[in-house]
Length: 278
Image 1 (cartoon, helix red, strand yellow):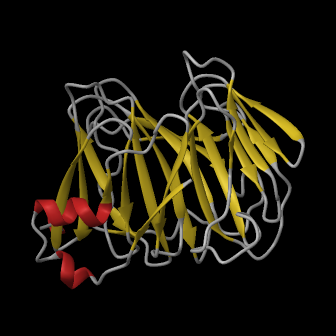
Image 2: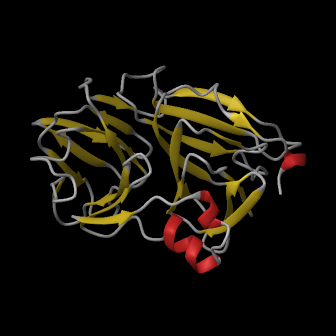
């Protein structure tokens, strides 16, 4: 299991970053590595995110010194969305089969978690988010149909999309983790505009279904001091609580968002009008 550490930084620091430094601190270029559990531990609310890509082997979620626990979910909870071929997750002996876009919530205290692919030629790609948790909730499988759906945006503003809430109070209980998949309609490119911040929680985006010759430009920073990072397919970006998180694609795409922090509501954003962005 690979675990990279990313540290928090002050918003004033980011004002002085060049492109290379921005990418170093916020962008994760490689999420899915064959037959490996590849994770990033961010000190922004101590979220852990990354890819589990079993091909020839069954991969077991282990533990490491950085966690200081006897097993991975001793003091954590976990959300998973499969963005590859069909696969299976075994949680303490209970099997869950996950097809493309199926999700799973695993509560704090689960000890043995194993990942396998049904077909090595079309392997599963399990994208996971994990947050600290102080209470255990039941493990729940969540497919795309079970996810809570919110239709928003319009064609005129190029942001027509469906927000699919997987780990969310409308679907299942969790301690603090919230996670979902947003799918943009053809002809739409903006994922969140007008943009917002929420000091109460941080967020990580994983951009998906971006063709090789296309890109998404992810905007971050404070509203009066914005920055951008150019994103490719299956790359992730860390968004601290003080930062906007908005993107425009050269073509429609989808993305997985995951959040942890003080609350789990979606009606408390601090919106920033487009005319006030700089």
